[in-house]
Image (tube, rainbow, N blue to C red; front, side, top):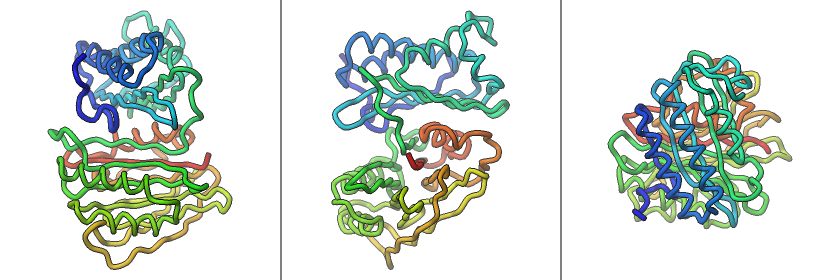
Amino acid sequence: MASLPEGLLDAGVWFRVEAAGTAAAVRRAAERLATELGMPPARIADLSIVATETASNLVKHADEGTLLLRAARVPGRAGVEILALDRGPGMTDITRSIGDGHSTAGTLGIGLGAIVRQSSWSDLHSVPGRGTVMAVQIWAGPPPPPSWAAGITRPLTGEPVSGDGFAVREAEGRRQVLVCDGLGHGRLAHAAMQEALRVFESTPAAPPAAVVEALHRKMGHTRGAAVAVAELDPDAGLVRYAGLGNIAGTVLHPDGSRRGMVSLPGIAGHQRRQIREYDYPLPAHGVVLMHSDGIVDRWKVADYPGLLSHSPQVIAATVLRDAGTRRDDAGVAVARLP
Protein backbone atom coordinates (compact mmCIF):
# COMPACT_ATOMS: atom_id res chain seq x y z
CA MET A 1 0.00 0.00 0.00
CA ALA A 2 1.34 3.45 -0.88
CA SER A 3 2.31 5.73 1.98
CA LEU A 4 -0.22 8.29 3.10
CA PRO A 5 0.06 11.88 1.86
CA GLU A 6 1.87 14.14 4.31
CA GLY A 7 -0.44 15.33 7.06
CA LEU A 8 -3.29 12.91 6.42
CA LEU A 9 -3.14 11.53 9.96
CA ASP A 10 -3.13 14.95 11.64
CA ALA A 11 -4.23 18.11 9.83
CA GLY A 12 -5.76 16.13 6.97
CA VAL A 13 -5.74 16.46 3.21
CA TRP A 14 -7.77 18.91 1.13
CA PHE A 15 -9.37 18.08 -2.23
CA ARG A 16 -10.81 20.47 -4.78
CA VAL A 17 -13.86 18.61 -6.04
CA GLU A 18 -14.67 19.78 -9.55
CA ALA A 19 -14.54 16.66 -11.75
CA ALA A 20 -16.21 13.28 -11.41
CA GLY A 21 -12.86 11.53 -11.16
CA THR A 22 -12.12 13.27 -7.87
CA ALA A 23 -14.61 11.00 -6.08
CA ALA A 24 -12.38 7.97 -6.74
CA ALA A 25 -9.34 9.81 -5.36
CA VAL A 26 -11.25 10.77 -2.22
CA ARG A 27 -12.47 7.19 -1.76
CA ARG A 28 -8.97 5.74 -2.11
CA ALA A 29 -7.51 8.22 0.37
CA ALA A 30 -10.31 7.55 2.85
CA GLU A 31 -9.77 3.80 2.63
CA ARG A 32 -6.03 4.19 3.16
CA LEU A 33 -6.55 6.45 6.16
CA ALA A 34 -9.06 4.05 7.72
CA THR A 35 -6.66 1.14 7.19
CA GLU A 36 -3.85 3.07 8.88
CA LEU A 37 -6.18 3.77 11.81
CA GLY A 38 -7.03 0.08 12.14
CA MET A 39 -10.73 0.30 11.30
CA PRO A 40 -12.48 -3.03 10.54
CA PRO A 41 -13.27 -3.89 6.90
CA ALA A 42 -17.04 -3.49 7.34
CA ARG A 43 -16.69 0.11 8.46
CA ILE A 44 -14.11 0.81 5.76
CA ALA A 45 -16.73 -0.33 3.25
CA ASP A 46 -19.26 2.07 4.79
CA LEU A 47 -16.66 4.84 4.69
CA SER A 48 -16.08 4.16 1.00
CA ILE A 49 -19.75 4.80 0.31
CA VAL A 50 -19.77 7.98 2.38
CA ALA A 51 -16.60 9.35 0.79
CA THR A 52 -17.76 8.57 -2.75
CA GLU A 53 -21.26 10.00 -2.30
CA THR A 54 -19.99 13.13 -0.53
CA ALA A 55 -17.54 13.93 -3.32
CA SER A 56 -20.09 13.04 -6.01
CA ASN A 57 -22.66 15.39 -4.46
CA LEU A 58 -20.15 18.23 -4.62
CA VAL A 59 -19.54 17.53 -8.32
CA LYS A 60 -23.27 17.35 -9.14
CA HIS A 61 -24.70 20.13 -7.01
CA ALA A 62 -21.98 22.48 -5.74
CA ASP A 63 -20.04 25.51 -6.83
CA GLU A 64 -16.39 25.66 -5.71
CA GLY A 65 -16.68 22.41 -3.79
CA THR A 66 -13.82 21.41 -1.47
CA LEU A 67 -13.43 18.47 0.87
CA LEU A 68 -11.22 17.83 3.90
CA LEU A 69 -10.40 14.26 4.92
CA ARG A 70 -8.78 13.72 8.32
CA ALA A 71 -8.55 11.51 11.38
CA ALA A 72 -10.92 12.06 14.30
CA ARG A 73 -9.51 11.09 17.69
CA VAL A 74 -10.67 10.56 21.26
CA PRO A 75 -8.63 8.83 23.96
CA GLY A 76 -8.05 5.23 22.90
CA ARG A 77 -10.02 5.46 19.65
CA ALA A 78 -9.81 6.92 16.16
CA GLY A 79 -12.30 7.44 13.37
CA VAL A 80 -12.43 9.29 10.06
CA GLU A 81 -13.99 12.72 9.55
CA ILE A 82 -15.01 14.31 6.26
CA LEU A 83 -15.86 17.99 5.90
CA ALA A 84 -17.51 19.08 2.64
CA LEU A 85 -17.79 22.79 1.80
CA ASP A 86 -19.40 24.54 -1.16
CA ARG A 87 -20.62 27.98 -2.16
CA GLY A 88 -24.02 27.20 -3.56
CA PRO A 89 -26.82 26.92 -4.38
CA GLY A 90 -27.70 25.74 -0.88
CA MET A 91 -30.80 23.91 0.33
CA THR A 92 -34.16 25.35 1.30
CA ASP A 93 -35.40 22.12 2.94
CA ILE A 94 -32.62 20.01 4.44
CA THR A 95 -34.95 17.28 5.75
CA ARG A 96 -36.43 16.75 2.30
CA SER A 97 -32.99 16.81 0.67
CA ILE A 98 -31.80 14.00 2.97
CA GLY A 99 -34.77 11.80 2.14
CA ASP A 100 -34.21 9.21 -0.58
CA GLY A 101 -35.80 10.04 -3.89
CA HIS A 102 -35.19 13.79 -3.77
CA SER A 103 -32.84 15.01 -6.48
CA THR A 104 -32.06 18.29 -8.23
CA ALA A 105 -29.66 16.74 -10.75
CA GLY A 106 -31.79 14.12 -12.51
CA THR A 107 -30.32 11.24 -10.45
CA LEU A 108 -31.98 8.74 -8.12
CA GLY A 109 -31.47 11.14 -5.23
CA ILE A 110 -29.98 8.61 -2.79
CA GLY A 111 -26.61 10.30 -2.15
CA LEU A 112 -27.31 12.48 0.87
CA GLY A 113 -29.55 9.91 2.53
CA ALA A 114 -26.88 7.23 2.11
CA ILE A 115 -24.25 9.51 3.65
CA VAL A 116 -26.34 10.13 6.75
CA ARG A 117 -27.30 6.46 7.17
CA GLN A 118 -23.77 5.10 6.83
CA SER A 119 -22.17 7.74 9.06
CA SER A 120 -21.78 7.41 12.82
CA TRP A 121 -22.47 11.14 13.21
CA SER A 122 -23.32 13.95 10.83
CA ASP A 123 -24.17 17.64 10.87
CA LEU A 124 -25.19 19.92 8.04
CA HIS A 125 -25.94 23.63 7.66
CA SER A 126 -27.09 25.26 4.46
CA VAL A 127 -28.13 28.76 3.41
CA PRO A 128 -29.75 29.27 -0.01
CA GLY A 129 -27.45 31.31 -2.20
CA ARG A 130 -24.46 30.88 0.13
CA GLY A 131 -23.87 27.18 0.13
CA THR A 132 -23.66 24.13 2.35
CA VAL A 133 -21.23 22.75 4.92
CA MET A 134 -21.48 19.12 5.99
CA ALA A 135 -19.45 17.20 8.58
CA VAL A 136 -19.58 13.42 8.92
CA GLN A 137 -17.68 10.93 11.06
CA ILE A 138 -17.31 7.19 10.72
CA TRP A 139 -16.30 5.17 13.79
CA ALA A 140 -15.99 1.49 14.58
CA GLY A 141 -18.53 0.91 17.34
CA PRO A 142 -20.66 3.59 18.99
CA PRO A 143 -19.64 7.17 18.22
CA PRO A 144 -18.13 9.24 21.04
CA PRO A 145 -20.10 12.20 22.45
CA PRO A 146 -20.12 15.24 20.13
CA SER A 147 -17.08 17.47 20.48
CA TRP A 148 -17.39 20.66 22.53
CA ALA A 149 -14.55 22.20 20.51
CA ALA A 150 -13.06 21.65 17.06
CA GLY A 151 -11.15 23.49 14.39
CA ILE A 152 -10.02 23.48 10.80
CA THR A 153 -6.87 24.66 9.01
CA ARG A 154 -5.88 25.15 5.39
CA PRO A 155 -2.41 25.90 3.99
CA LEU A 156 -1.51 28.77 1.71
CA THR A 157 -2.22 27.82 -1.89
CA GLY A 158 0.79 25.91 -3.22
CA GLU A 159 2.16 24.88 0.18
CA PRO A 160 1.94 21.22 1.29
CA VAL A 161 1.65 22.05 5.00
CA SER A 162 0.10 24.82 7.11
CA GLY A 163 1.73 26.97 9.77
CA ASP A 164 -1.64 27.43 11.45
CA GLY A 165 -2.86 24.90 13.99
CA PHE A 166 -5.18 24.29 16.91
CA ALA A 167 -5.45 21.88 19.83
CA VAL A 168 -8.09 21.05 22.42
CA ARG A 169 -7.53 19.58 25.86
CA GLU A 170 -9.28 18.86 29.15
CA ALA A 171 -6.79 18.93 32.02
CA GLU A 172 -7.91 18.68 35.65
CA GLY A 173 -11.30 20.14 34.81
CA ARG A 174 -9.93 22.92 32.59
CA ARG A 175 -11.39 23.00 29.07
CA GLN A 176 -8.82 24.80 26.94
CA VAL A 177 -8.34 25.58 23.25
CA LEU A 178 -5.10 26.72 21.60
CA VAL A 179 -4.82 28.49 18.24
CA CYS A 180 -1.36 29.22 16.86
CA ASP A 181 0.07 30.77 13.70
CA GLY A 182 3.70 29.90 12.99
CA LEU A 183 5.62 32.93 11.71
CA GLY A 184 5.51 33.07 7.91
CA HIS A 185 4.45 29.95 6.08
CA GLY A 186 5.84 26.68 4.77
CA ARG A 187 7.77 24.01 6.64
CA LEU A 188 9.47 26.26 9.21
CA ALA A 189 6.11 27.81 10.17
CA HIS A 190 4.65 24.31 10.34
CA ALA A 191 7.49 23.18 12.63
CA ALA A 192 6.86 26.13 14.98
CA MET A 193 3.16 25.31 15.06
CA GLN A 194 3.85 21.64 15.79
CA GLU A 195 6.08 22.62 18.71
CA ALA A 196 3.36 24.90 20.07
CA LEU A 197 0.87 22.01 19.97
CA ARG A 198 3.37 19.68 21.68
CA VAL A 199 4.05 22.16 24.49
CA PHE A 200 0.36 22.90 24.96
CA GLU A 201 -0.55 19.24 25.26
CA SER A 202 2.31 18.43 27.66
CA THR A 203 2.11 21.48 29.95
CA PRO A 204 0.49 20.73 33.33
CA ALA A 205 -2.99 22.15 33.91
CA ALA A 206 -2.76 25.90 34.51
CA PRO A 207 -4.67 29.12 33.68
CA PRO A 208 -4.37 30.42 30.10
CA ALA A 209 -1.76 33.08 30.93
CA ALA A 210 0.52 30.46 32.50
CA VAL A 211 0.11 28.19 29.48
CA VAL A 212 1.01 31.04 27.11
CA GLU A 213 4.05 31.79 29.29
CA ALA A 214 5.13 28.14 28.96
CA LEU A 215 4.72 28.35 25.18
CA HIS A 216 6.88 31.47 25.08
CA ARG A 217 9.64 29.89 27.18
CA LYS A 218 9.83 26.66 25.21
CA MET A 219 9.55 27.91 21.60
CA GLY A 220 12.80 29.89 21.43
CA HIS A 221 14.42 27.31 19.13
CA THR A 222 11.66 27.81 16.52
CA ARG A 223 10.94 30.81 14.34
CA GLY A 224 8.10 31.66 16.76
CA ALA A 225 4.35 31.94 16.52
CA ALA A 226 1.31 33.98 17.44
CA VAL A 227 -0.60 32.00 20.07
CA ALA A 228 -3.78 32.31 22.12
CA VAL A 229 -5.40 30.08 24.73
CA ALA A 230 -9.07 30.21 25.73
CA GLU A 231 -10.51 28.40 28.73
CA LEU A 232 -14.26 27.82 29.03
CA ASP A 233 -15.57 27.78 32.60
CA PRO A 234 -19.21 26.62 32.63
CA ASP A 235 -19.60 27.06 36.40
CA ALA A 236 -18.58 30.72 36.29
CA GLY A 237 -20.14 31.40 32.87
CA LEU A 238 -16.81 32.83 31.68
CA VAL A 239 -14.17 32.40 29.02
CA ARG A 240 -10.64 33.17 30.20
CA TYR A 241 -8.33 34.30 27.42
CA ALA A 242 -4.63 35.08 26.97
CA GLY A 243 -2.81 35.69 23.70
CA LEU A 244 0.43 36.88 22.13
CA GLY A 245 0.36 38.16 18.58
CA ASN A 246 -2.25 38.33 15.86
CA ILE A 247 -4.77 35.69 16.94
CA ALA A 248 -8.34 37.00 17.00
CA GLY A 249 -10.73 35.78 19.67
CA THR A 250 -14.45 36.53 19.75
CA VAL A 251 -17.44 35.56 21.89
CA LEU A 252 -20.47 35.13 19.63
CA HIS A 253 -23.81 35.67 21.37
CA PRO A 254 -27.04 33.91 20.32
CA ASP A 255 -28.64 37.26 19.46
CA GLY A 256 -25.96 37.87 16.79
CA SER A 257 -23.85 40.31 18.82
CA ARG A 258 -20.17 39.67 19.37
CA ARG A 259 -17.46 40.63 21.86
CA GLY A 260 -13.80 40.74 20.85
CA MET A 261 -11.12 39.38 23.17
CA VAL A 262 -7.67 40.92 23.64
CA SER A 263 -4.38 39.43 22.45
CA LEU A 264 -1.27 41.45 23.32
CA PRO A 265 1.62 42.23 20.92
CA GLY A 266 4.44 39.71 20.75
CA ILE A 267 5.80 36.50 19.23
CA ALA A 268 5.83 33.38 21.37
CA GLY A 269 9.43 32.22 21.65
CA HIS A 270 11.02 35.55 20.79
CA GLN A 271 9.49 38.71 22.17
CA ARG A 272 6.86 39.77 24.63
CA ARG A 273 6.22 42.75 26.86
CA GLN A 274 3.71 41.07 29.10
CA ILE A 275 1.23 38.23 29.19
CA ARG A 276 -2.15 39.04 30.65
CA GLU A 277 -5.34 37.08 31.06
CA TYR A 278 -8.80 38.55 30.57
CA ASP A 279 -12.23 37.25 31.58
CA TYR A 280 -15.32 37.61 29.38
CA PRO A 281 -18.95 36.61 30.01
CA LEU A 282 -19.99 33.48 28.13
CA PRO A 283 -23.77 33.10 27.77
CA ALA A 284 -25.37 29.66 27.93
CA HIS A 285 -25.64 29.30 24.15
CA GLY A 286 -22.66 31.46 23.26
CA VAL A 287 -19.77 30.36 21.06
CA VAL A 288 -16.06 31.13 21.35
CA LEU A 289 -14.38 31.59 17.96
CA MET A 290 -10.62 32.02 17.49
CA HIS A 291 -8.72 32.43 14.23
CA SER A 292 -5.41 33.38 12.65
CA ASP A 293 -4.89 36.39 10.39
CA GLY A 294 -5.60 34.12 7.43
CA ILE A 295 -9.26 34.76 8.24
CA VAL A 296 -10.67 38.20 7.49
CA ASP A 297 -13.36 39.58 9.77
CA ARG A 298 -15.98 40.23 7.10
CA TRP A 299 -18.74 37.82 8.00
CA LYS A 300 -21.85 38.36 10.13
CA VAL A 301 -23.66 35.80 12.26
CA ALA A 302 -27.01 37.21 11.06
CA ASP A 303 -26.22 36.07 7.50
CA TYR A 304 -26.22 32.42 8.64
CA PRO A 305 -29.55 31.65 10.35
CA GLY A 306 -29.21 28.86 12.89
CA LEU A 307 -25.45 28.42 12.44
CA LEU A 308 -24.56 28.86 16.13
CA SER A 309 -26.74 25.88 17.06
CA HIS A 310 -24.56 23.57 14.97
CA SER A 311 -21.40 21.65 15.78
CA PRO A 312 -18.04 23.41 16.22
CA GLN A 313 -16.83 21.65 13.06
CA VAL A 314 -19.59 23.10 10.90
CA ILE A 315 -19.26 26.59 12.38
CA ALA A 316 -15.48 26.62 11.88
CA ALA A 317 -15.73 25.29 8.32
CA THR A 318 -18.36 27.89 7.39
CA VAL A 319 -16.13 30.71 8.62
CA LEU A 320 -13.12 29.29 6.78
CA ARG A 321 -15.10 28.96 3.56
CA ASP A 322 -16.44 32.50 3.53
CA ALA A 323 -13.73 34.48 5.35
CA GLY A 324 -10.53 32.53 4.68
CA THR A 325 -7.91 33.97 2.34
CA ARG A 326 -5.91 31.89 -0.13
CA ARG A 327 -2.92 34.23 0.25
CA ASP A 328 -2.01 32.90 3.69
CA ASP A 329 -2.39 29.87 5.93
CA ALA A 330 -5.81 29.97 7.59
CA GLY A 331 -7.02 28.42 10.83
CA VAL A 332 -10.23 28.58 12.87
CA ALA A 333 -11.20 26.96 16.18
CA VAL A 334 -14.65 26.99 17.76
CA ALA A 335 -15.71 26.01 21.29
CA ARG A 336 -18.97 26.04 23.18
CA LEU A 337 -20.17 24.96 26.60
CA PRO A 338 -21.17 21.28 26.46
